[in-house]
Length: 230
Image 1 (spheres, rainbow, N blue to C red):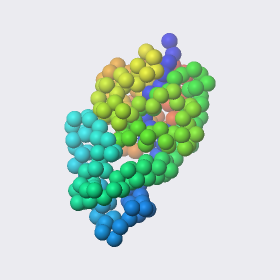
Image 2 (tube, one colour):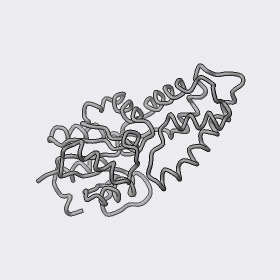
Image 3 (cartoon, helix red, strand yellow):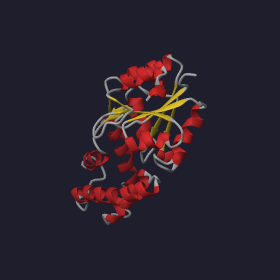
Image 4 (cartoon, rainbow, N blue to C red):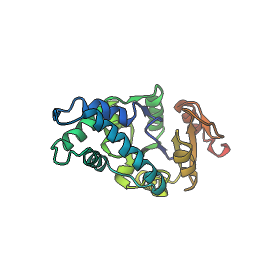
């Protein structure tokens, strides 16, 4: 039996863009809640410090920390409790994050061909707010080519935790599934550990046996049914 569903990573696989910290730095210069009492450059540095401190926790425990909680910690550590601009900052950050994403040149073809061949697609992303996955897909006109979006923000755990892959599989109602992504740890090893086939889209770093150079090459493998030879 051929592949029934593809689970595909979002960032650096389907789309790309500036890091969240870079987006945050742009946002803090534009929120209407600016005040002479707020040092916005300091706020950006605090954001990076909070991100860094949470990075190890998330990697070790494979739990997600939501964007709202991250911003609450940033505001607290910057001594700005009661500032009144938390919600505005969050909304603007999500909006600007989506605005700065772009798709790879073969992303649309990859998704369209899967759809036309009856293969279901689940986007599976480690991201602190579900809207940060959905809004870029909508803005880029890709949402109609995706059946379901599964995020660590919704599930509560991050790849390579087994639960996020199993959640995506259940959402597609498929048993013959392949994972496609750019991260060896999250998208290949994590998928293999729950019994899935996996294809590594090489973007940088190390090549492995299941590496391909593009989504188009991944598509050829999926549609040809040559997964067992990888």
